[in-house]
Length: 138
Image (cartoon, rainbow, N blue to C red; front, side, top):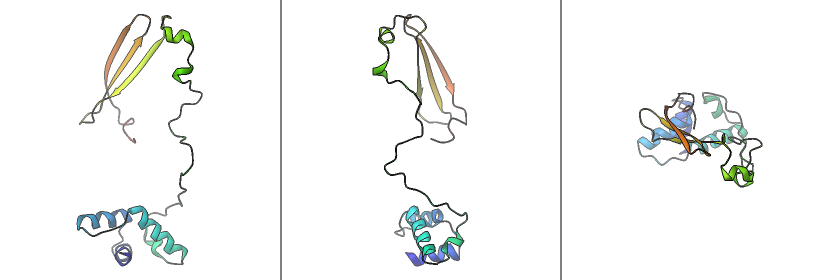
């Protein structure tokens, strides 16, 4: 396996992703892409030169073990159970509630947006098509 990785990197100039993909196509047992990178960087620590054949210089990655998730957090958010009682009664006109439902991914990604005024029980529904920016990375 190590010989195959060395040969593919040095002679064929393949990336670790290409090595793994090719092995999957021709049914050769191969470790994961991450393990191939670990092998290359381990070789570098020992004075080897496999890392030179990578297409881009990869920064050392820090593992995110035992760290809180920082992405997607709303600062100063109030949990539903901690809202004032007046909000729970839904008696004030002007208290809005919004919900977004994401549809099944087809050729067009569709969203259903619902806006409700709780005191009057009026709702507005709008079918929206996703913008490419919204679907860029999930």
